[in-house]
Length: 303
Image (cartoon, rainbow, N blue to C red):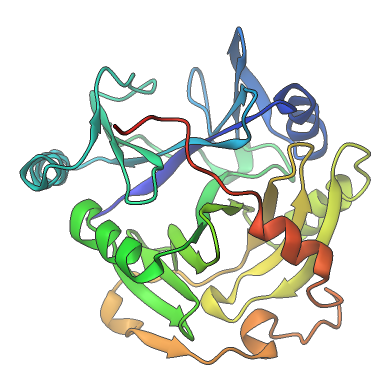
């Protein structure tokens, strides 16, 4: 199945401050707002489309994230599996702009996952995109207390496949030619680890992190470096809600899964940063604490 990450919705009492960070320091643009909700677009988003939703809430949590497919047969098969398994489906969940059908399901750790069907659209010419602005949300990494079971659920129910494991602590799940779209990190509680944003090429990556590094609303945490899994060049920032956002570029693209067979990577300094911290400085306790986050029970009651 071919799926992409359409948008991520984050809830926090500090969401209004995060709007300024993401539109100023991060480079996104405002698409729409209503009371307590602001939708922001990346460079590929036009009209009513968006990539990030900021929800003002007393509780800090992942409100939801949204996956989309352009294949009607895949969409129908996914919904059929969910209903046959008796999974928790959220009634009356709204569809995003451009979707023809959609629903929400609750994953094993209480997260709401939107799944939508939308027609394929022509991508804009890269020359027409604004300079040094993220193109789209590339992947989401979630902390998990039951990483094996949750990984299997996303494969069995939503149609992902596992690209790699890093030791026994991280699973990387793919649904398109990117190295991964969803990943899980073993942790003592469920929470958001980070959301990654794709840059078109290396020069724009560095111009974007140069702008974001001047932030007074957020904080540069870790990078630049080059990961082991996926080979991405990365840099991590902390937003005003205390969620981590990653800027990435130059990662693996896999057109035929047979060209990138499943593997298990050993946990090593090279698997974290192939450049061995010469630019990133290595992971700090500050980064580790922020990536672990606070326990997230989700915003949707499942009983």
